[in-house]
Image (tube, rainbow, N blue to C red):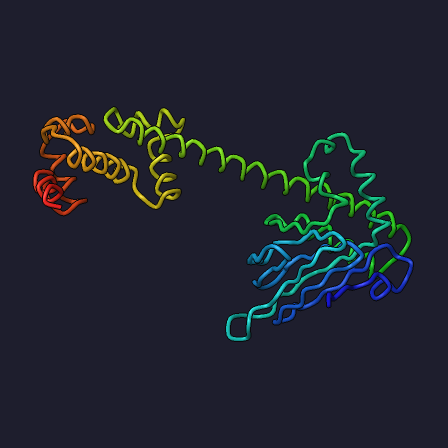
Length: 290
Protein backbone atom coordinates (compact mmCIF):
# COMPACT_ATOMS: atom_id res chain seq x y z
CA UNK A 1 0.00 0.00 0.00
CA UNK A 2 1.38 3.42 -0.97
CA UNK A 3 2.19 5.91 1.77
CA UNK A 4 0.34 9.08 0.69
CA UNK A 5 0.71 12.27 2.74
CA UNK A 6 -2.15 14.77 2.60
CA UNK A 7 -2.24 18.55 2.84
CA UNK A 8 -4.50 18.41 5.91
CA UNK A 9 -1.84 16.42 7.77
CA UNK A 10 0.63 19.33 7.62
CA UNK A 11 -1.01 22.68 6.93
CA UNK A 12 -2.57 23.66 10.26
CA UNK A 13 -3.39 27.25 9.34
CA UNK A 14 -4.27 29.36 6.33
CA UNK A 15 -0.69 29.93 5.27
CA UNK A 16 0.11 28.59 1.78
CA UNK A 17 3.36 26.97 2.94
CA UNK A 18 4.61 24.81 5.77
CA UNK A 19 8.33 25.00 6.63
CA UNK A 20 10.27 22.77 9.01
CA UNK A 21 13.64 21.13 9.64
CA UNK A 22 14.04 17.37 9.91
CA UNK A 23 16.49 14.49 10.08
CA UNK A 24 15.85 11.78 7.48
CA UNK A 25 15.24 8.20 8.58
CA UNK A 26 17.79 5.45 8.08
CA UNK A 27 15.23 3.10 6.53
CA UNK A 28 13.60 3.45 3.12
CA UNK A 29 10.21 5.17 3.41
CA UNK A 30 8.81 5.73 -0.09
CA UNK A 31 5.91 8.17 -0.11
CA UNK A 32 4.04 10.69 -2.21
CA UNK A 33 1.80 13.64 -1.35
CA UNK A 34 -0.84 15.93 -2.78
CA UNK A 35 1.28 19.06 -2.27
CA UNK A 36 4.61 20.35 -3.61
CA UNK A 37 7.83 19.91 -1.66
CA UNK A 38 11.25 21.53 -1.72
CA UNK A 39 13.73 19.55 0.34
CA UNK A 40 17.22 21.00 0.87
CA UNK A 41 20.09 18.98 2.35
CA UNK A 42 22.04 21.31 4.61
CA UNK A 43 24.01 18.61 6.43
CA UNK A 44 25.14 15.06 5.68
CA UNK A 45 25.14 12.63 2.76
CA UNK A 46 22.51 10.03 1.93
CA UNK A 47 20.57 8.33 -0.85
CA UNK A 48 17.66 9.71 -2.82
CA UNK A 49 15.10 7.22 -4.15
CA UNK A 50 12.32 7.67 -6.68
CA UNK A 51 10.30 5.04 -8.53
CA UNK A 52 12.88 5.02 -11.32
CA UNK A 53 16.18 6.21 -9.87
CA UNK A 54 18.58 5.77 -6.98
CA UNK A 55 21.03 8.67 -6.59
CA UNK A 56 23.45 9.84 -3.91
CA UNK A 57 22.51 13.17 -2.39
CA UNK A 58 24.78 15.48 -0.42
CA UNK A 59 24.97 18.82 1.32
CA UNK A 60 23.97 21.78 -0.91
CA UNK A 61 21.72 19.64 -3.10
CA UNK A 62 17.96 20.01 -3.12
CA UNK A 63 14.87 18.29 -4.47
CA UNK A 64 11.98 19.97 -6.28
CA UNK A 65 9.14 17.46 -5.98
CA UNK A 66 5.73 17.66 -7.61
CA UNK A 67 2.56 16.11 -6.16
CA UNK A 68 1.97 12.38 -6.74
CA UNK A 69 5.68 11.58 -7.12
CA UNK A 70 7.02 8.70 -5.02
CA UNK A 71 10.37 9.45 -3.40
CA UNK A 72 12.38 9.45 -0.18
CA UNK A 73 15.77 10.43 1.22
CA UNK A 74 17.50 7.80 3.34
CA UNK A 75 20.26 8.52 5.85
CA UNK A 76 23.23 6.12 5.96
CA UNK A 77 23.51 3.46 8.63
CA UNK A 78 25.05 4.44 11.97
CA UNK A 79 28.28 2.77 10.92
CA UNK A 80 28.48 4.78 7.68
CA UNK A 81 27.61 8.31 8.70
CA UNK A 82 25.44 10.84 10.49
CA UNK A 83 21.81 11.54 9.72
CA UNK A 84 20.94 13.62 6.67
CA UNK A 85 19.39 16.88 7.82
CA UNK A 86 17.05 18.84 5.56
CA UNK A 87 15.04 22.01 5.38
CA UNK A 88 11.61 21.28 3.92
CA UNK A 89 9.19 23.78 2.44
CA UNK A 90 5.81 22.27 1.60
CA UNK A 91 3.54 24.24 -0.72
CA UNK A 92 -0.18 23.91 -1.26
CA UNK A 93 -1.00 22.82 -4.81
CA UNK A 94 -3.41 25.70 -5.48
CA UNK A 95 -0.82 28.21 -4.27
CA UNK A 96 1.94 26.69 -6.40
CA UNK A 97 -0.37 26.88 -9.42
CA UNK A 98 -0.67 30.59 -8.76
CA UNK A 99 3.12 31.00 -8.42
CA UNK A 100 3.76 28.98 -11.60
CA UNK A 101 1.33 31.19 -13.50
CA UNK A 102 3.19 34.32 -12.39
CA UNK A 103 6.53 32.66 -13.15
CA UNK A 104 5.48 31.75 -16.68
CA UNK A 105 4.47 35.34 -17.33
CA UNK A 106 8.09 36.43 -16.89
CA UNK A 107 9.27 36.91 -20.47
CA UNK A 108 12.92 36.20 -19.76
CA UNK A 109 12.08 32.65 -18.60
CA UNK A 110 9.26 31.79 -20.99
CA UNK A 111 11.39 29.47 -23.11
CA UNK A 112 12.99 27.46 -20.31
CA UNK A 113 12.44 23.74 -20.77
CA UNK A 114 11.98 23.68 -17.00
CA UNK A 115 8.54 25.22 -17.37
CA UNK A 116 7.36 22.21 -19.39
CA UNK A 117 7.94 20.04 -16.34
CA UNK A 118 5.85 22.14 -14.00
CA UNK A 119 2.41 20.66 -13.52
CA UNK A 120 3.63 17.14 -14.37
CA UNK A 121 4.86 14.48 -11.98
CA UNK A 122 8.61 14.85 -11.48
CA UNK A 123 11.34 14.90 -8.87
CA UNK A 124 14.22 17.18 -9.81
CA UNK A 125 17.56 16.95 -7.97
CA UNK A 126 19.96 19.88 -8.39
CA UNK A 127 23.12 21.32 -6.80
CA UNK A 128 23.14 24.72 -5.14
CA UNK A 129 26.81 25.33 -4.39
CA UNK A 130 26.25 29.08 -4.01
CA UNK A 131 23.41 28.48 -1.50
CA UNK A 132 21.11 30.89 -3.33
CA UNK A 133 18.19 28.46 -3.15
CA UNK A 134 18.99 27.73 0.50
CA UNK A 135 18.79 31.43 1.38
CA UNK A 136 15.35 31.75 -0.21
CA UNK A 137 14.12 28.68 1.67
CA UNK A 138 15.51 30.09 4.93
CA UNK A 139 13.60 33.33 4.30
CA UNK A 140 10.38 31.35 3.73
CA UNK A 141 11.00 29.33 6.90
CA UNK A 142 11.58 32.53 8.87
CA UNK A 143 8.38 34.14 7.62
CA UNK A 144 6.45 30.96 8.33
CA UNK A 145 7.66 30.78 11.93
CA UNK A 146 7.54 34.52 12.67
CA UNK A 147 4.71 35.58 10.40
CA UNK A 148 4.03 39.31 10.63
CA UNK A 149 2.92 42.18 8.43
CA UNK A 150 3.98 41.67 4.81
CA UNK A 151 4.95 38.04 5.43
CA UNK A 152 2.66 36.74 2.71
CA UNK A 153 4.24 39.01 0.10
CA UNK A 154 7.75 37.97 1.16
CA UNK A 155 6.84 34.29 0.91
CA UNK A 156 5.30 34.80 -2.54
CA UNK A 157 8.36 36.69 -3.81
CA UNK A 158 10.67 34.03 -2.40
CA UNK A 159 8.67 31.31 -4.13
CA UNK A 160 8.96 33.08 -7.49
CA UNK A 161 12.69 33.55 -6.83
CA UNK A 162 12.98 29.83 -6.10
CA UNK A 163 11.43 28.98 -9.45
CA UNK A 164 13.80 31.39 -11.22
CA UNK A 165 16.91 30.10 -9.44
CA UNK A 166 15.84 26.48 -9.94
CA UNK A 167 15.27 27.16 -13.64
CA UNK A 168 18.76 28.67 -13.94
CA UNK A 169 20.36 25.68 -12.25
CA UNK A 170 18.30 23.27 -14.35
CA UNK A 171 19.25 25.10 -17.55
CA UNK A 172 22.95 25.15 -16.61
CA UNK A 173 22.87 21.42 -15.86
CA UNK A 174 21.05 20.68 -19.12
CA UNK A 175 23.51 22.74 -21.17
CA UNK A 176 26.45 21.06 -19.45
CA UNK A 177 25.00 17.63 -20.24
CA UNK A 178 24.34 18.62 -23.85
CA UNK A 179 27.92 19.85 -24.18
CA UNK A 180 29.19 16.55 -22.77
CA UNK A 181 26.92 14.62 -25.15
CA UNK A 182 28.25 16.66 -28.08
CA UNK A 183 31.82 15.87 -27.04
CA UNK A 184 30.93 12.18 -26.83
CA UNK A 185 29.38 12.36 -30.31
CA UNK A 186 32.67 13.80 -31.56
CA UNK A 187 34.53 10.95 -29.88
CA UNK A 188 32.19 8.41 -31.49
CA UNK A 189 32.98 9.98 -34.86
CA UNK A 190 36.71 9.74 -34.12
CA UNK A 191 36.33 6.05 -33.24
CA UNK A 192 34.44 5.41 -36.49
CA UNK A 193 37.09 7.32 -38.43
CA UNK A 194 39.91 5.27 -36.91
CA UNK A 195 38.18 1.99 -37.73
CA UNK A 196 37.54 3.09 -41.34
CA UNK A 197 40.91 4.76 -41.97
CA UNK A 198 43.29 2.59 -39.96
CA UNK A 199 45.91 2.75 -42.73
CA UNK A 200 45.92 6.54 -42.99
CA UNK A 201 47.11 9.47 -40.90
CA UNK A 202 45.98 8.91 -37.31
CA UNK A 203 48.38 11.29 -35.60
CA UNK A 204 47.17 13.00 -32.45
CA UNK A 205 47.40 16.41 -34.13
CA UNK A 206 45.25 15.28 -37.07
CA UNK A 207 42.58 13.59 -34.93
CA UNK A 208 42.42 16.54 -32.54
CA UNK A 209 41.78 18.85 -35.48
CA UNK A 210 39.00 16.56 -36.73
CA UNK A 211 37.38 16.51 -33.28
CA UNK A 212 37.78 20.28 -32.79
CA UNK A 213 39.66 19.67 -29.55
CA UNK A 214 43.16 20.33 -28.28
CA UNK A 215 45.62 17.42 -28.26
CA UNK A 216 45.60 17.22 -24.48
CA UNK A 217 41.82 17.45 -24.18
CA UNK A 218 41.25 14.76 -26.81
CA UNK A 219 43.68 12.40 -25.11
CA UNK A 220 42.11 12.96 -21.71
CA UNK A 221 38.49 12.70 -22.90
CA UNK A 222 39.18 9.63 -25.07
CA UNK A 223 40.68 7.79 -22.10
CA UNK A 224 37.77 8.82 -19.88
CA UNK A 225 35.18 7.81 -22.50
CA UNK A 226 36.67 4.47 -23.61
CA UNK A 227 38.95 3.44 -20.75
CA UNK A 228 41.79 3.09 -23.29
CA UNK A 229 44.57 5.43 -24.36
CA UNK A 230 44.07 6.78 -27.89
CA UNK A 231 47.41 5.39 -29.11
CA UNK A 232 46.62 1.95 -27.66
CA UNK A 233 43.20 1.97 -29.33
CA UNK A 234 44.72 2.82 -32.72
CA UNK A 235 47.28 0.03 -32.30
CA UNK A 236 44.55 -2.48 -31.41
CA UNK A 237 42.48 -1.54 -34.48
CA UNK A 238 45.47 -1.79 -36.78
CA UNK A 239 46.74 -5.06 -35.33
CA UNK A 240 43.24 -6.61 -35.48
CA UNK A 241 43.13 -5.76 -39.20
CA UNK A 242 46.63 -7.16 -39.66
CA UNK A 243 45.55 -10.41 -38.04
CA UNK A 244 42.65 -10.69 -40.47
CA UNK A 245 44.97 -10.19 -43.45
CA UNK A 246 47.52 -12.66 -42.12
CA UNK A 247 44.78 -15.28 -41.81
CA UNK A 248 42.96 -14.64 -45.08
CA UNK A 249 45.54 -13.36 -47.59
CA UNK A 250 48.94 -14.19 -49.02
CA UNK A 251 50.25 -10.62 -48.77
CA UNK A 252 53.72 -10.31 -47.33
CA UNK A 253 54.23 -9.11 -43.79
CA UNK A 254 55.87 -5.96 -45.20
CA UNK A 255 52.86 -5.17 -47.39
CA UNK A 256 50.44 -5.78 -44.51
CA UNK A 257 52.56 -3.54 -42.32
CA UNK A 258 52.23 -0.64 -44.81
CA UNK A 259 48.53 -1.35 -45.48
CA UNK A 260 47.77 -1.06 -41.75
CA UNK A 261 49.42 2.35 -41.45
CA UNK A 262 52.87 1.47 -40.14
CA UNK A 263 55.86 3.15 -41.78
CA UNK A 264 58.34 1.00 -39.83
CA UNK A 265 58.34 -2.79 -40.04
CA UNK A 266 60.12 -2.89 -36.68
CA UNK A 267 57.35 -0.88 -34.99
CA UNK A 268 54.69 -3.06 -36.58
CA UNK A 269 56.34 -6.25 -35.36
CA UNK A 270 56.86 -4.78 -31.89
CA UNK A 271 53.20 -3.75 -31.51
CA UNK A 272 52.01 -7.03 -32.98
CA UNK A 273 54.04 -9.12 -30.53
CA UNK A 274 52.97 -6.91 -27.63
CA UNK A 275 49.27 -7.39 -28.38
CA UNK A 276 49.22 -10.91 -29.83
CA UNK A 277 52.12 -12.58 -28.04
CA UNK A 278 54.05 -13.64 -31.15
CA UNK A 279 55.46 -12.19 -34.37
CA UNK A 280 53.28 -11.73 -37.50
CA UNK A 281 55.02 -14.62 -39.25
CA UNK A 282 54.55 -16.92 -36.27
CA UNK A 283 50.90 -15.93 -36.06
CA UNK A 284 50.35 -16.76 -39.74
CA UNK A 285 51.96 -20.19 -39.28
CA UNK A 286 49.80 -20.94 -36.25
CA UNK A 287 46.64 -20.00 -38.12
CA UNK A 288 47.56 -22.26 -41.06
CA UNK A 289 47.95 -25.29 -38.79
CA UNK A 290 44.46 -24.85 -37.30
